[in-house]
Image 1: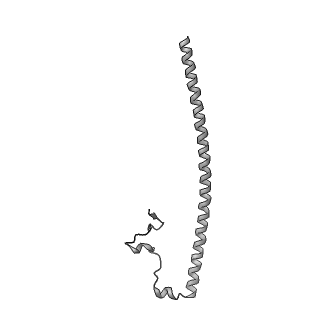
Image 2: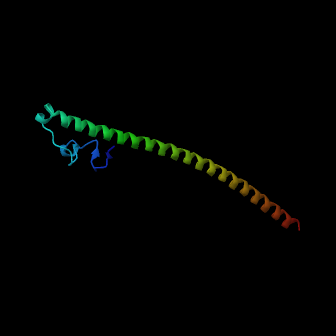
Image 3: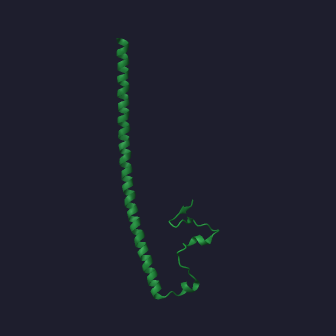
Length: 109
């Protein structure tokens, strides 16, 4: 099963095209740049990642809240539907009983 994230790339990534693994906006890294990053750039990257994780945690919390609210709404609607089906069945039974009584009156008259 493939999922598509916001940048339009399929996940899991297609192994035939490795260019999909990073977004076009992602910085290019080389062994030299990964081996000894400057302390200030490392701090900046860490701060950026920290902000991003905090943003994602906020999104996760709001999605959990929304999911909880939707589940409660679904349960409420399911209960309402069951009550309406029961009322509908009761009305059907009463209408059939009235029809039966009318037919009986018609035949006796």
